[in-house]
Amino acid sequence: MEFERVAFDLPHGTFHALQGGDPDGQPTLVLHGFPDHPPTATPFLAELGRRGRHVVAPWLRGYAPSPTAGPFDLAALTSDVLALIDRWSPGRAVELIGHDWGAAITYHTCVTAPERIERAVTLAFPHPLTFLSWPRPAQLRRSWYMGLFQLPGSGLMVAARDLALIDRLWRQWSPGLSLDPALQAELHEHLRASMPAPIKYYRAMLRPGMLGATRRLSQPITVPLLQLHGADDGCILPPQVDDRHRFAAPHALEVVPDVGHFLHIEAPEAIAERIAAWAQ
Image (cartoon, rainbow, N blue to C red; front, side):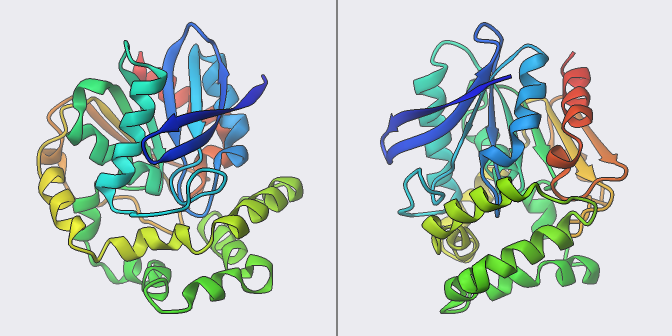
């Protein structure tokens, strides 16, 4: 299944995306996480397309060739998503799928404009307030990079030795995944053109704008939502607390065996099938 490069002129600039699947199918917007971009997930996007979806996967703000200028708080990132929905699917609510930071944006979009989202899926990231209220030692050890990214000059550290730190994170977060060398080279090219914007997402977590996002996220989510987590995730542990009070619509949480943080890249067919079965 072929995916084409498309562009959308939005208030913050021109956003680039991959588009494909069934043009008459369910509009499905897929948001990538850190340190990633849409092409690595093309097999997963194609599996969604084979299951009756019209798929668009944008390069998020901060990731070239989309605009790399900030701000990078959740409200700003959500505004891009809503502008894209209004531009791409003005007459029909979308299925929203987000991985990692894309999942954080998905939760926030669901409480900001639930009428624009038919259902949502988050991959590898719990509800943000669950994550922030969950300082377990095992998770703190996995989150060391978040502290690193607050330091001056951390952008240079990330870019050093041909993005060796990025490759290390991929290995630690999905131990069973070996990214295709061509895809890895393409990812490196885009990340080099983007730095240091992608790590500014983490700096925005400590800025005043996060307070407004926290207030919005304290509202129960009224959009049907599926949470999928890899059992071997070396980045973010699956939630082990009861946070059902954060969801006021049909909600399910599944831990998928034998995959890590980039579960949709490791097992594209299986993850797409889980999403399709839940949606039905």
